[in-house]
Length: 408
Image (tube, rainbow, N blue to C red):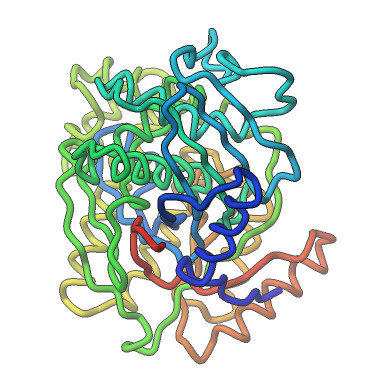
């Protein structure tokens, strides 16, 4: 089912500010927005110091924020139906195992899983030496689909980090704020993600892909005006998430780290693609071998993609996407029947290429197609899902959008 474009952050700013005033009895000091992302190519490479190429989506988390001086953090989401969660800033700390931020709660807070993301950012900023942060009132609303592999959590982290950076005059750069968001998710929430999602949310530029080296966070904004070339990139949200994905990300990260140790390198980034067969011959564990093959070959696919885009041949990127999906499906084993169905059906219906994007086991796929073929490709995917008895997918264009910014 195709979906309409979300309201722009600027359009949402007034409603979020009004919601803040109703909750807290005063106008916010400002309103900020940070987008979700979709990754064109380079999956499970960021925690291996590799290369990625995401773009920011028009879907954003919008936050109205004011400072407090009494040491309390109050957070509220318009999307959850829950009340305000109140936390003591000085008492914020990860629970054992990264359980996520209920330490420091004031009173009965109920299910505060989502609140761990903004709370984790406050904790990470203070851990980084910014004890000047003495509390905040935060009201959030997001149009980033949750559970779709489009980094709704990174959008929350980034928007709160940027707001506090501005309000408290912390002077942190966008890449530094991305690292703060990653630390919040790794150490506070307990998810061992790489830095791609937060970097895309913090640093993306409208009309561009973000070609990112995750080892040193050097980046290049790559023009990506598909409409000018008669092309379109679709996001197909399968609207499913399989339980098999629970813990799978951490297991694959551990497997990649085991592969690096076995090969005597710090990270798999150091394994040259030209010497991949030799490296694979040195690995006894077939699972580790497959993980290494995916990471090294996906770094090479990023290099091929940037070369094709620089040469003005965006259509030739399609087969690279499909090749990447096969690697994610067969070597990394993070796909699922619904994602495989999207890719196979879209390509059969005339798409130039397609692949799953994000962590997998559900979530979303991307489809590169001629602009004139998008309706037919969308219908083919919807019909295939209906025939298989799956919930109808959500389909929308991936429009390269601006990164985090103040909007009110």
